[in-house]
Amino acid sequence: MAKLYGIDVFSGEGAGITKKVDYDFAIVKVSGNPQAYAWNYINPKAKEQLDAAYKKTGMVGVYHFTWGKHDPAMEVSLFVNEVKRLGYLGKAILFIDYEAEATRLGRTWIAKFAKQVKDKTGCTPVIYASGSVIQSQSLGKFGYPIWEASYPTSKTINGYNPPSGKVWYKDRLLWQFTEHGRLKGYGGDLDLNVYYGDKKKWISLTKQNAKPKKPVAYPTVNLVIGDKGSQVERLQECLKKDLKIKLAVDGSFGPKTRDAVIAFQKKYKLEPDGKVGPITKGKLKKLFE
Image 1 (cartoon, rainbow, N blue to C red):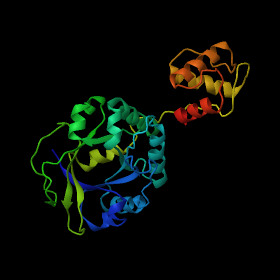
Image 2 (image 1 turned 60 degrees about the vertical axis):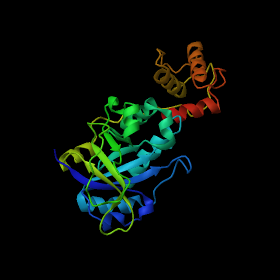
Image 3 (image 1 turned 120 degrees about the vertical axis):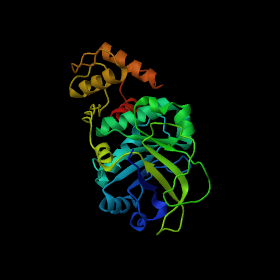
Image 4 (image 1 turned 60 degrees about the horizontal axis):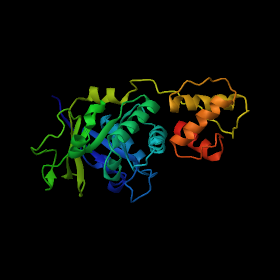
C-alpha cells in the first residue's frame, strides 16, 4: 500500500509554516473552534498556508473544528462558505474535526454534519476523531473515510517516523500519529500524519462525486391561514421536506398547511399557534438556508 506523509496546521504555527517544512500533503484549519472560543472563528492565515502548500505539492486538505451546535447547519455553512471563498472547493479534501465537546452529541450528530457537508458540496468529507471515539461510536459504519488520531507515545518524534501502536480502525484513510512531531525548518511541535494512498486517490477525493442538493427556498414573510402565493409554496415545500409528509404545494395556506405548521412548531418546541411569525420563520431559515 502506498504511503505519503504530511502535516496538519492552524494559525498558531504561522502563515509561512507550509513554506518552511517538507511534506507530501498539508491539511489546514479554515474554521471552527472548541467551546472555550468563538464557534464562528475563521483562520486569517489559511489562504497563505493553503496557497503555498498547493503550489508545493498539489495535495491539500481543509478542516473545520466542530464546536458542537445542536443544529449543525450553521457550522456547516460557515465551513463550506469559507472553503468556497478561499477558492479550494474541488481542490482540497474536506475534513471534519470531531473532538472535544462536540463528541458528547454522538454519532448521529456527526453523521448529520457530514451529510450536510456532502449535500452542500457534492464532495464526500473525511471525519477526524480519536481512535477511542471512532471505536466507541462506530464512526466507520457511516461510510465516510476516517482520519484516526492516536499516539503510541507522548515523546517527541523527529521526522516522519510513526511508531508501532494499536490500530483503532483498520480501514483508516489517514493516521495522525503524534502532536509532538519535529521537522527541519520549524522549531516547534507539529501534528504528523500518514496517508494510506497515492496522489491520484487524494485528488479524486477533492472532486465532486455527487451533485450538490438544490436548497429548498424558505419563506421570507410572515404567513397565516388564508394567505396565498409563492411564499406559501415555499412554506409547503419546507414542511414537506422537514416533516416528511404529503402536503399539496398549491400556494394556498389552508387548514392542512396550518396543521403542518403546528406539527413543525411542536417538533422544534416553538409556540404551536399555526402561524409563521418571526420565530418560526427564523427556524425555517436556519434549517433551509
